[in-house]
Image (cartoon, rainbow, N blue to C red; front, side, top):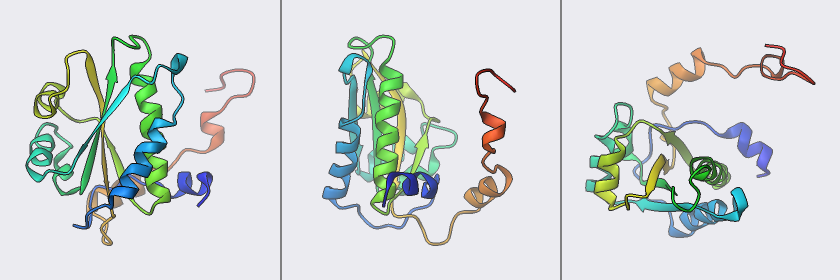
Length: 174
C-alpha cells in the first residue's frame, strides 16, 4: 500500500477485534515513529507499549472519551522530553505518532488517536518521569467488522472539508 492510499484509508477506530497484534507489526509501527523528523533531530520521544489488560483498563478510565481503550489490543503512549526539546517536544512526538498511524494502516490495523486522558494518572500508571509530557495515546488493533455506532455517526455528520475550504494560494482566503 502506498502512503497516499494509507492516508485515504485511515479512520479513527474505536471498536477492535480481540485479536493480539503480532510483535513484528508493532515493531514496524514503532520503527516508523523512530524515523520521523524532529526539530534539530533531537528525537525527544519515548513510547510506552501497553498490552496489559489491567493497565489498559486504568488508562481507559482516565479520560471521558477513552473508555474504548480497554478493548484495544495495544495502546501506545507517546511521551515527549520537555528538557531535551522545551519548545518542540509536543510537535515532534505528534509527527512521530502520525507516522505510526500511517504504518499501522498499511499493516491492515486500525488506530485511534486519543487526547482524552488524565496525564497525571497515566504518568503514575506507567512510571513516566516528571520531565516527560504525555502527548497522546494511540489505540492499535484489528478493526471490529461491525463498526460501533459512534464511529458511523461521526463519519456521517463530519465529512472531510474540500480543498477550497482549507487552502488559500498566496493569502488567507477564509
